Image (cartoon, rainbow, N blue to C red; front, side, top):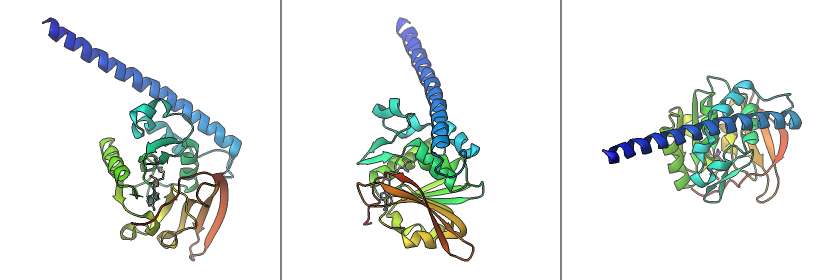
Length: 241
Ligand code: SAH
């Protein structure tokens, strides 16, 4: 009897602790959203006064603590990159928000992401568009992200293991493309797989140096207009699969 009662107490305590954690996380997440808004107003990298409300709402919804390892959870809502293993990082929330804002997501969009990593950027997009296709080159990360996104209910994200340099021909053309790793140049296959009128955001520059975040717009007649947005630091786009 005592054992049973103890078990009930333990279960109750665990449930309460989990609830308290969720509450702490939601407060931390709201504070992160405020920080990103503040940062965006200061930086105005996008040339706009503020980031799109829907983008900010998605940032306020996605549980970033579920995209990092348990020993990194307490840092989950800090406005900085977080290691996700295999020498990779989940991007700074401000940069995720900025990149998402710059593709001007619309409900009916089909978006390609290169560099699934933890799946966080894909989840932010999934709340805003019809479908997200995302490619990751490191097998362990690709597997983890696939399982994580399914577990968290993001059923409009399709992931695959592969070299994102070549895009995903089968599902092209895309309304927008987000590249989450720094390339030495804009991969021509990605330009080809962008719809006329579509936008691509990609960090370009050498390894271990500051890169430029570029916004490419493909006009209706296929011309590409490129704009430099901000100096950034991303892990390199690797090749070879
Ligand atoms: N968007 C991710 C962060 C990604 S970090 C998130 O929200 O967590 C960049 C990711 O790009 C890494 O996971 C890295 O393994 C991956 N990557 C690097 N080169 C790649 C390539 N050629 N194709 C696909 N993914 C690549």
